[in-house]
Image 1: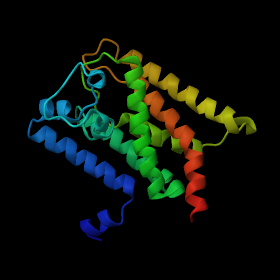
Image 2: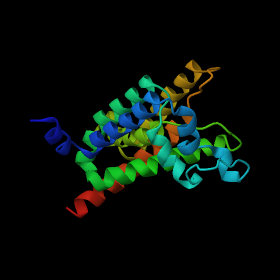
Image 3: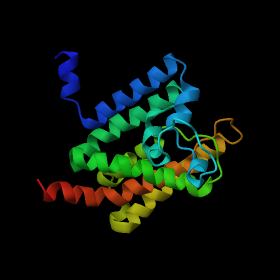
Image 4: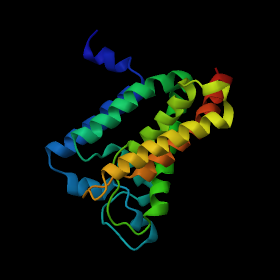
Length: 208
């Protein structure tokens, strides 16, 4: 199987991971970070009208465009590894249409969560972590087994609680860093994945 055939037969999430990695590589190779982060990064202060960036994308599009921007190789590599691994399983369950909806929804919900706690922030939030967290949330709900036979909302609450704890620990580890991690965006994205996993599963099989 040649490279072209492999790409054509790959899942949507795999293709999205490759495109996102390519976008990061172009920005990094040509040293376009300053322009790219202002052009497509999610900047909360833009939504109040207090900050205008000439030539930038409309602010309403930046929760999605920010998913194609990453700080460094580790940032994009970790996100794309999660997208590739969890995305394959989620896509099998909810289909291409479902994972597109989930990814976009996760990007906007996570950006909204970041905005709620950082409305006056002039720095850009970049990365696909929020959208990928939605994929991880859906994967966790679809493929994990409830403990002690406790399903339904108890299982959802357990998964959400575990993810929140992980994110708080990550946040503590990066405390004082010049590039703080947007843990609230990760939490909101994960919860979005938990909320949409079953509706999208039913939507996929209802139309099958």
